[in-house]
Length: 138
Image (cartoon, rainbow, N blue to C red):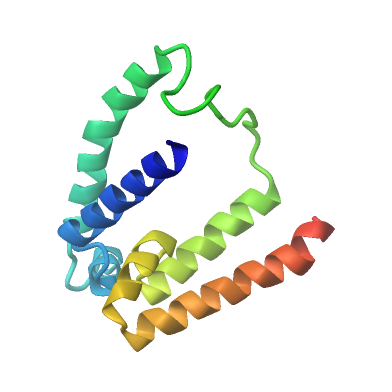
């Protein structure tokens, strides 16, 4: 049942990305172009997500346990360290330059675009390098 729930959540997420236009990297780059041809679409997508998720999170936290797991997995760390900040900065730079983040990139693989194929290949190589080398040093 967990795999089915995860698959349905992934399909719903992917469909939302496609319907909102977030699989188009020019939308993201247009949102970041504050002094040029600014595109507010991403702000509306994020606002819509918050309007749904804030009450859903509140209702979910009132439950004793999740529907498909034994317990909630909520992060307990509250500190900001160099690793977290560095990762956020690197993610933001990559997102701004390429116009993709992992979710929309994976959904966009269905288009067969060479740009998204190169992005996903580079993303996987970066994750492999991190897993095999850097993560053990920090």
